[in-house]
Structure formats: C-alpha cells, structure tokens
Length: 178
Image 1 (tube, rainbow, N blue to C red):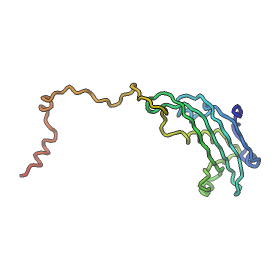
Image 2: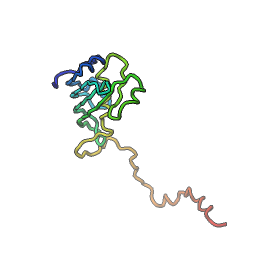
Image 3: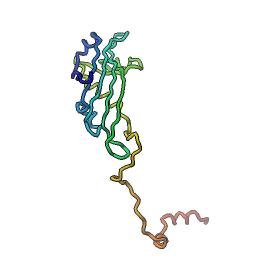
Image 4: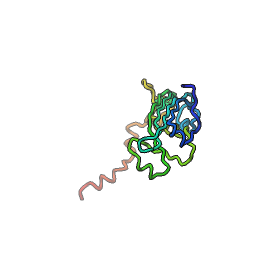
C-alpha cells in the first residue's frame, strides 16, 4: 500500500471503536516543521497506524514509520541520506492528570477535539526519531569552505619577543622575600 495516502484527520471516537488500521505514505514535504531539519524535502514516509482500545479502555495508537530523508552531514556539510525508522505507542488523553496516570510503555497525546490530526502525530514522531548528529556512513573529509579560528602564522623573531615586557613580571617581585 505504498501509494495510499494517509487521511488528514480521523474521528477520534469512531476510529478506536472500529479498531482500524491505516497503512500508507505521506510526502516529506508535507511536514513543515520536520522539513526545516532536512537538506531537501524529497522523499516519502511509509506509515502504519493501529487504533485500539486496551484492557482499561484507553484509546491507544500503535504505529510505525520508515523513510529515507536528506540531511546535511555535520563533517563535510554535504547532503547525505539517512533512514528514519521508529515505532511508538501513544495513548489519547484529554488532560495532563490523565497523562500522569499512564503506564511507562505509553506516551501521552493530548486530544480534546473530535478530530485527530494524523499529520501532527506523525510529524512529532519524525522529529523525535531524528539523530542528534547526522553524517555520512563512510568517512568523509571536513570541508575546506569553513576554517574557523585558524591560527595566524607568526612572523615575530626571538629578538622581538625579548623586547616586550612580561606582563607577569610584577608578580615575580611579590614572590621575592622581603
């Protein structure tokens, strides 16, 4: 079902009662905040979402996503492809107090509306699964475009160094016994 597009939103009550599963894909360009982290917005993210009611009648979304995205290598500042892959379990809650009562294996997703916007959930999960630092898998050389704090070549001779007063000479006089 790689060609099937994910709906923009679902009914937050009906989808869990139906215990539905949604498989499909979304273009990376559709995720505005996530796209800001990328070198370009080409690519597609494959998604699987299962909507269930658990034993305590909590609304749970069990999902998985996978996609190849273009990021900047932090070593050479050139574009490289990385594969993002994540699985998650979210419980829909309406208040912060409900979120505090969730078991450790469930992450809260606050939803007070009847519409559950799937793109928001997926974009948040994509951002969370991004690596802290991205780089080519093979060795790459740092770019020569940026040279920060490069040491200047010194043209001073040893005679010039002797002519300058030592700024710490005053401390030497304090160290001598009186």
